[in-house]
Length: 248
Image (tube, rainbow, N blue to C red):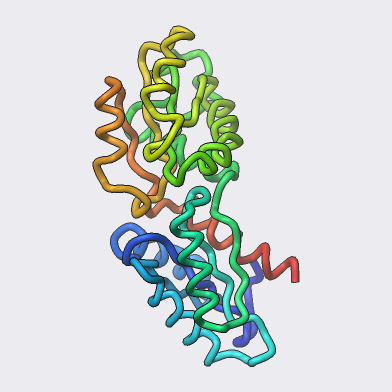
């Protein structure tokens, strides 16, 4: 990320499902604090994405007509059909020159953030290098996504990265489609993993707060917290913006 940007540089417009409050607002605040050279805007998609349309139009009014007004970064760990549709609607309705990045995963930083959330709950070793000979708190991990089968497929590289960090089997399951959490738990227990933890690969607004914890309870597993306002997620969002600038 450049340390300085001209005033006409595209705005970084963060968006996600819901109203953009809570942990997502905290995440936006982290990104602003770490990147004061960027104009950071935040818009929840709600039901009609009108808030995002308004933010794009506002960004365009402050920039030359012949330039890209905004780079939209979806605050999502993976693809989500509802969010993707709403973002497309908002961009089309605004009529603004906009670049939309991919979701934040898969990425090594995402796997690291998941590792940290598991460690915070005592479900993983905090230091994978110094403590390789120490028994793990669990025998296997279920990486839980939302967004349908496509999200499950897109999360597979993150599962591989997390498995490498933890030296444990990690399977991906969906909280809102197949393959489900119960199926993943059965597969893990079939290879001898009795102590299972569920790791929600979501930032928060993508699912009801109790969805992951209820799924974990149903299979007798412990559950890590959602990713939420994590510094590594803030870094990923800034990198997504910076990658578009560097490509131009």
